Image (cartoon, rainbow over all chains, first blue to last red; front, top):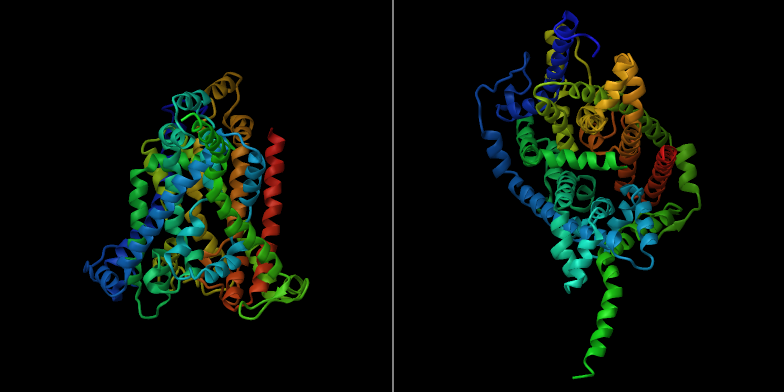
Length: 280
Length: 296
C-alpha cells in the first residue's frame, strides 16, 4: 500500500494478485467442470490418461439413464416437496415465535428463550437415536412426516428472526393495536411485511439446509420412493452397477437447483451468511 | 344485550394473556418432544445395554468406561476427528482470510471471484464428496495430472496414511468460501479513516494489518473458529461417501463410529458416544462464551 502507483513494484503486485485470484478460482471451478464434463462422456472415456477435458463424443445417455432407470425425478420431487414444506413451516412458526419473544411481554419469556439458546448447543447426534425411536413409535418412519414434522421449526431460525424483529419500533405495533388489530392481526399485517428481508435470509438457510441434509433422511427413510436427492445420490454411488458417468449425471442434477437459486439470490445469501457473524 | 360485553371482555383478556404462549407453542412443543425428551432418553440409554429390540439393561458407566479405556477404534476415532479439526482449522480460516484480504483491495471481477469461492459452500456435502471421490480415484483426474508431470500416482483414499488428509483437503475446498465471505464483510466494515490516520502517522502495510485489521477482525475470527470447530467435530457426510471410515479405520470419526454402532443396534453404546461428543462441544461453546465476554 505504501508503494507508489505505476512503479514496477506496484504493477508486479497487481499482476501477482490477479494470478493468485484467477488460479484459486480455477481450482474452485475445475471439480464442478469435471463433474459436468464426466456426466457427458461415455463410460470408457471417464478415466483416461491424459484426461479428456472436452467430452468426445458428447452424449446425454447418462442423464437419460439416471432420469428413466433410476427414480431420480422422484428423488427430485421429494426434495422439493420436503424443502418447500419445511421452509414454509419455518417462515410461519419461527417468525411468529420470534415476534412473541421480541415484542410481547409474558411471564417466563426470558427463561424459555434462555432454555432455547442452551438447546441450540446440543449436537443433533445426541437426540438422533431416540428421535428415530419416537418416529418408530408414531409409525412415521419411512414417511414424509418423519422428514418434515421434527424439522418444522428451528431455534436458530427463531433466534435469527428475533434479532431482526427487535429493530421494528414498538410505536408501529401500538398504532396497529389502537386501530383494533388483534395480536395475530398485528403479526400478519405489520410484522410480517416488515420482516420480509429477514424472512429472505431464513428461507435461504432453511431451504439450503433441508435440501442438503443427509444424516437424518439417510437414517429415517428406507424406501427408495421417499429418498431425497442426497440419499439417492449416495445410494447410486454405493451401487456396483452404476458407472462414474451416471453418478456424475446424478451429482449435477442434485447440485444444479441450489446453484441456480444461489446465482439468483446471491446478495441475500451473502447477507444472511454474514449477518450472524457480524452481529454477534 | 347488556350482559354480552362481560363474557366478551373475559375471553378477550384470556386471549390477550394466552396469545404470546400460543405464538410460541409449536416451537416449544417441538423442543420438548423432539429435543429435550430424546436428550434425556439418550442419556438414560447411555447407561444401558440396549439393542432397540430387547428392553434396556442398566450397566452403569460401563459404556463410557469401555469407550474411553478399551475401545481402540473409538480412541482412533477421537484422534482422527481431532486431527481433522486441527488440520482443517489451520488451513480453512487462513485461506479464507487471505482470499478476503485479496478481495478487499481494488480488484475487478470481485463478485465473480467471491462466487467461485462460495459456490461449494452451498453445495451439499454428499455432492462435493461424490465429486472428490472421482477426482481421487486411482486413475482419476488428480493422478493423471500428476502423471503428465512425471510424478507417481498417489493412493489418495486407499493409503491409510493419506486418506484423512485427502478428506481434509476436500472439506477445506468445500468450506473456506464461508470464511472468505464473512471476513470480507468484516474487512469492509472497518472505517477507512483508521487506515488514513495510520498512514499519516507513517504506519506501513504490516503495522496497519497488525494494529488495525487484526484487532478489528478479532470477534469474527473467534466466531469463525468456534463455529468451524464445532461443525468439524461432527464430520460425517464426507466420511460416509468417500471412505466409509477406512482404510483400516484411518478415517473413522466420532460421528461415523456412532453411526456404525447405531447400525449394529448397539444403541446404548452409540448414545454414550453422542454424549462424549456433546461434552467436547460444550467445552468449545464455553470457550466461545468466555471469549465473547472478554470483548464486552
